[in-house]
Figure 1 (cartoon, rainbow, N blue to C red):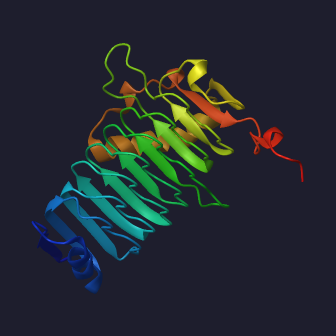
Figure 2 (figure 1 turned 120 degrees about the vertical axis):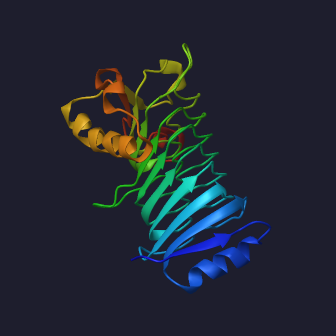
Length: 245
C-alpha cells in the first residue's frame, strides 16, 4: 500500500512547504494551498503531488518526471522549463503555461492565459505537449521551436474565439492545433494555417483521449473535421530582417 503524506499548507511559507516535500520521495496531498510558489520544482518520477487550492508561479518548474494534479487553478508559468513529467490542472491556468518546456505534458481542463507554450522546444524524441480544454489568450505559441499545442475550445459561447491575436508570433518549429478556425489576421507572419490531415489525426487523437480520461469529457464532442493546424513556413521567419551571416 502506498502511503500518502498529507500536508496542510495553510499559512505555510513556500520554502518550508517545498523543503518538507523534498525530504522524502512519495505521494503527497497538499490542502489549503494559496499561492505557494515552486511546488514540484525539479522533482523526479519518485514524486506524486496532489494539490488542493491555487499553487503560485512556477509550479513544476524544471520538473524531471514527477506527476502533479491540481484541483483548482494555477498562476503563471506552470511547467516552466519542464524536462519530464505530467501536470494535470482541474481548472484554468494563468499566463505562460508551458514556458520553455523541453518534454513532458500539461493538461489544462479550462482556459489558459497569454503566451501559452512560449519558447516550447524539442529535441529528438523529446516532444513536449500542452493541451488546453477551453481557450487561450493572445500570443499562443510565441517563439515556439518545437512540441505540440492542442486547444480544444470546449465550453466556448457562440461567437467566442478559441485564441487571441498574434498567434504563433516568431514560431519556428512545432505545431499548434486548434479545434476552431481563426481569422487570418490573428495568425503571425510566415505561418501556414491549414486543415489537419490523417497524420495530424494520429498525433492528436491520443491527446484528446488522455484529456477525456483526466477530466471526464466525451471524445465524440470534438469533431476533428473542424480542426486546423498552424506551422511555420520556415525555421527563420524573421531571417530577412537581420544582416546575413
